[in-house]
Length: 138
Image (cartoon, rainbow, N blue to C red; front, top):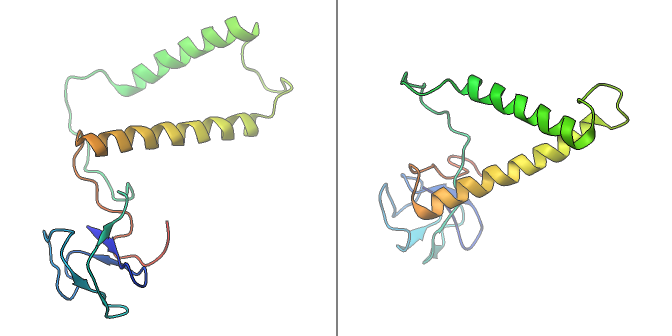
């Protein structure tokens, strides 16, 4: 778990980067900051990070995701033709980069929402904290 010093805001791991904390220590214990040396009573855990690699996938009997995505794409094409009266084509008067960027922003928000809901309800495996081994901002 990564924590932030309440005094100097240095980020530290709970796995040995504290003078008085080690793996599994409760976040309400006091710790000495390795950066400023001050003792502070509250360790602030950081948001989870998704930058660590996932394990390799395992084979199972589920339908391949590509098939599901292709079926969704066909459905989106049907809905788009119905809504706009034409298929999506090049040189249609819209800026595809702006459309794509706006969709990507929506995607990021929905992904963050799903991850945060899982984290708060404990419906997912523990995600390591954001800045393990880092001193920089997010």
